[in-house]
Image 1 (cartoon, rainbow, N blue to C red):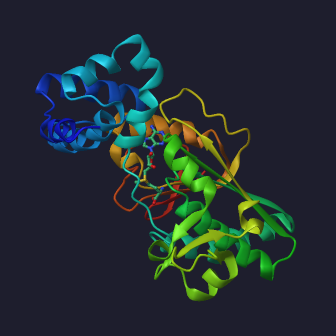
Image 2: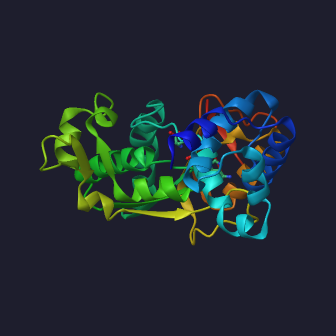
Length: 284
Ligand SMILES: C[S@@+](CC[C@H](N)C(=O)[O-])C[C@H]1O[C@@H](n2cnc3c(N)ncnc32)[C@H](O)[C@@H]1O
């Protein structure tokens, strides 16, 4: 790509009309709200696509998106650049202490043995999945008859590829993950300059990842879960969409199963088959 071309992309601006078109499309595809306050953010993120396609203007890009070829090829890339993937290991740690202190001992009282199934719905790059894996694995060390499996799903295929890979930089891991857990559950890259760590195979084997779009009528997850973590995802949807998504998620929760949402989200006033047990924690 020429320097001239790059500077044209740098200056490219999304018109209000094209922003409306893209916002409506993104809302229809992913349920993500696109108020005018998000225009600058959308413009900045879509510039990555202009660069990738070697296009100079948003007018050209938006025409392409709404063409037959664009509809077939580009939508997946729009979701990859538009979705906000902020996540962390041990994010909102109260949920993990509630899981190991209450939910898992209760599960063992009721089942004696068996496999505890968790769904990280909107898992981003996998930090939530592997945090759950460490917590469940630690519990299984004390209770050998306990087993578990974790499903991670997201709408973005690019972020799911990162999650499946299970490779994290040192700065992602530290200080969120205690050193004793890093030593146990991660392998340091042999190339010292890289400072990356990969989740150990024993843990990766307990996890699987799939693409699920919450806007679909049903979710291809193949089973019901003892717990669903759907945290910091609902916040991007309007109230009506949030309620519909949680209602559908509840179809995949076992009776007595737990539902966890993020601390900046609320289910108050929604028509759901859930009872509130603690702030942000519900039970079917
Ligand atoms: C901010 S991250 C939250 C990650 C993790 N749950 C946490 O709390 O750290 C939100 C994730 O939701 C995903 N997402 C957004 N809209 C979605 C949709 N319609 N269907 C499925 N996932 C979606 C995004 O791709 C993103 O990875």
